[in-house]
Amino acid sequence: AEIIGVSDRTMRRWRERYQEGGYDGLYDRRKRGPSPKRVPLKTAEKVLQLYREKYFDFNVRQFHEKLTEQHGIPRSDTWVKMALQGAGLVNKQRRRGSHRRRRPRRPLPGMLLHIDASKHAWFGDGRYYDLITLLDDATSEIYYAQLVEEEGTRTLMPAVQEVIQQQGLFCALYSDRASHFFVTPKAGGKVDESQVTQLGRALQELGIKMIPAYSPQARGRMERSYRTWQGRLPQELRLRQITRVEDANRFLRQEYRAEFNRRFAVAAMGKGSAFVRTRRKDLGWVFSIQQERRVNADNTIAWEKRILQIE
Image (cartoon, rainbow, N blue to C red; front, side):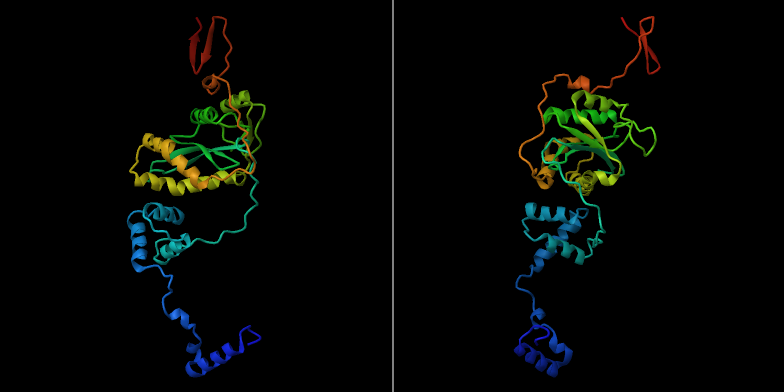
């Protein structure tokens, strides 16, 4: 009794039970009856039925939120996960391996914004679109989220312009090294800071610094955000029977972006904001496609295989 840390009375009782029933006598008799905290069978059946018939493509956390908010079943997320795994509706996840240490967040909103696009079958019917988002490094708040046919200069510039109009000028923009962000002479090499893209020229004119990322791990905050988008947005679109890009963008702008921020945005470490309201009225001109041309002797310029006459 002293070796295993129990009282001598408990040890005598175990000895008597072993002498009477062998090893079976040592089973914990409290586990033979159901726990008083056990979830009623009807509730468990209702949860499994809801998942099979309506939320079959939701992840566990998203399904738990729907149970609590829309169906009034306040069970813990751990119980929901174990119930779904026990019924074979959700696979058990493998343990994650070691990972690199996360980069600390910037202390104030507006100090650093992430921009990227994720190509995915958002409508679940084989059609692929790019979801462009701008995320604040300090709070993970999403300032912009829209579906487009393809990520590029003409779809990224309106996104940045809208954020500046709504939030103000920010300090820096963090992105990958795609050709619409940076000029990279050698694939996989460093960017050429002496050459700027259309977006780079616009941000340079506004005093916003562009920072290139040299690995996917460096943009881990944005990558994790897109995993969340891919695990939630297709299911929300299916529930609302949204199949058109225009309707999906209206849903993102008017409803879902605010709900996404309410669930996943965090408070900034510092007080205040680094956003600065701009007084410029020509943002439409700043974020336009601009090219330089030399005027010929006959007062014409060549542009995209065309000859334009200047009056």
